[in-house]
Image (cartoon, rainbow, N blue to C red; front, top):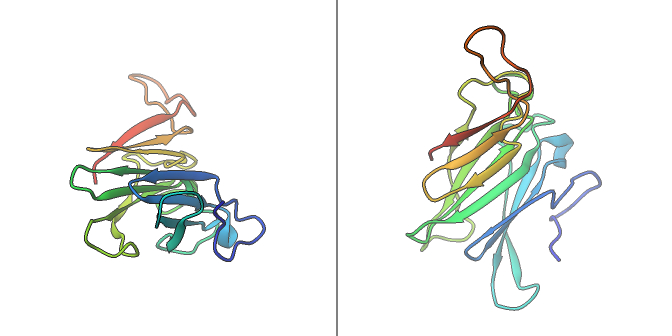
Length: 171
């Protein structure tokens, strides 16, 4: 069993989990008044409980209620590198609760503590309450991002509220 380093009440560690190659990522979106963190673990040997904490990732700002780590996804690419996508569905950079995702990459031959930050991505038409990053699915070519409260545009007339969307993001 893995526990968040220096865990506290309300962290919600394990709300989102992902694994690829020899790494595990666990989200704690309630940490630091909802700013959130993700802890990266590395399997050091085969068997049970052979993991070592390698890194704790946090959002680029420590504003409350971003819920960084509310979703996580990992995939191993053909070259052995690992892509990590982290949802922050409460991010308010573009609009209140519009959401965002963060992308990181680990490359073979580098320390397990070195995850390259690839960028923070937003929905193309971010609006208040979209919660972009509610769900993430990292893939070989692109990352899919769910925003269950986004509005659906209509050819004529107002958009339909809270229909949701899936956006394809390329790292």
